[in-house]
Image (cartoon, rainbow, N blue to C red; front, top):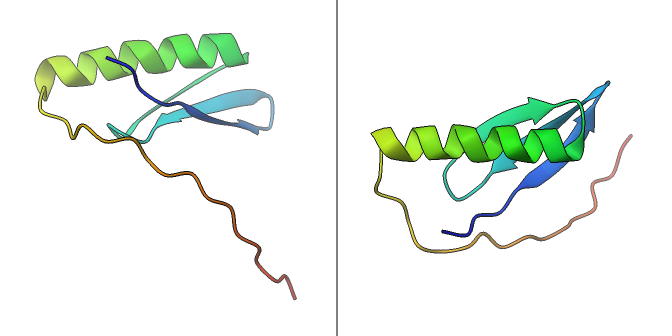
Length: 66
């Protein structure tokens, strides 16, 4: 199955989230973070195999900072 990964850098690590399943992992590089997320997602799906078959919608918005 094909899943999405949303990544962001937090200090010296990359955090990866799978919005379709809700799994999160991290790594010292983007590639490692995605590989760790794949493994976490596979383990999660072994325990909880039912998922929604839709992809998230990615949108941006602007917030005013005082």
